[in-house]
Image (cartoon, rainbow, N blue to C red; front, side, top):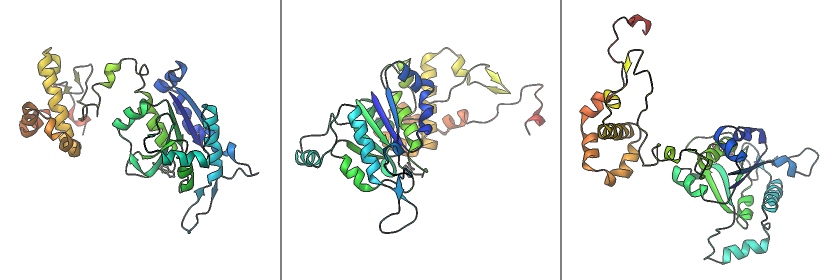
Length: 289
Ligand code: JB8
């Protein structure tokens, strides 16, 4: 996959050289280029913003540097840049769904919400381009113009407001990049995680089996794989009902009778509820209070 990012703060994206995504780039699974929007300005002050027509607080990103930057991305990827004619043609041919054109993702609090399902969808694309806005956003005509060469998608991370698109791009590139085949070493890691089955993850524990008076649930030490699987499923259901009732609602008709029993049984919640285990002999109780 190829990913291009355009930003006035390209250093924000330096973190994509680290860890799993950095390794994917080294391994040639992901080609990632970051461009500085200011390199596409033509004035002495490298101006990227101006005052909003209609008035209002803040500044708006000027359209021309964006057009030049996105044309440079297209040229670098061997695509032809947008022309007025190409824009019209794309609009006039309804059966052309745009497959083959790169996807232009524009982080915006006014976008559709980014989800794991969208991450899977985007992980199957050949070429993604991210346009990081700042200030009050990008002149709307850029998105209209870009629709001639890209499949344009305004996308929001969630219902809160960042100062610009860069942090949203870090999150999206990480979520998408790890779904590219070969990026996560053990693909089984992708199977059991939160949201892959519509439920939150079960809790995890490691050694020691007793830590500061807290015991790992006995069932996990039992070696009984069926009971362990049931315990984990019940914990997923309990947590999801507690923290994300909206997800339980969405799954309602996919739950079997054992799932329903776990959700209905307050004892399930009771015996697994988080809380301190009885203090071990010799543990100074005042040390915690
Ligand atoms: C200016 O909250 B956000 C977000 C906020 C922004 C811009 C882009 C995204 C541009 N403010 O996802």
